[in-house]
Length: 269
Image 1: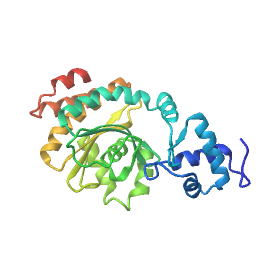
Image 2: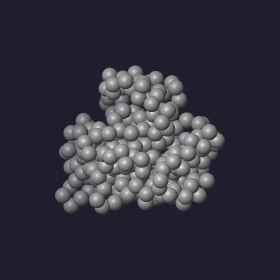
Image 3: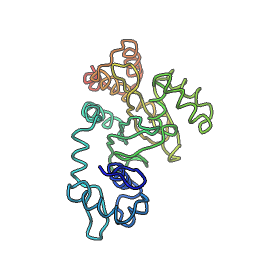
Image 4: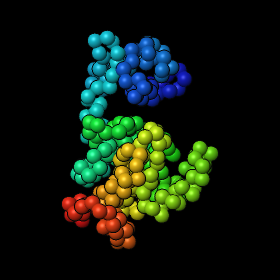
């Protein structure tokens, strides 16, 4: 691909145009895209024209450019997250049926939690999460629980980057490791709590988080935690994780809760 006068490749310029169509700017005119990407208007016109031709973007009747279904199809078909979503969905359905609130699957990506799946229903509490949306790891239960069980070197990088933003962040991660789950109260919405548990693979480090957003009430936490732990155990098992001690801890958590989780236990194995 030909480089621009600045040395930037055409692929890089195309990536800038596609990335500009985010949650804050889902539809932009060509001139708007040029402004956001700092590309010349003529270059932006050429890129948009070629992207429309291959279906990666489309133009509305009002001239606004939006991401196209062809791009969505390619990304979902070949994504490295596809296996994780496929494995997790049945367990997420179980959690959702118990908790009856937002149930989410997220991974860590460049210091943020990138959410791959989200189940919701009418009447659920406020939630900042959308599929393919992001939240900073240090403000979300999913991000904190992933980092609490991440490799030590990754934890140290996270601590250095966020220690000034979260009081006693190191102590908080230690508490999450002791509990086996993370609870964040009122961080994004005052009346909600985020609860998350780690998902493991054969590396024996966390690779994702299963989380819910519930009303801010200790009873909701007591209901959600066993369901999340059982589901995470099943997902982790299918991803190749084996740890008898953690299995026993999950089983104890479910047994000490008055709710009936027998069907979830059977699925989790």
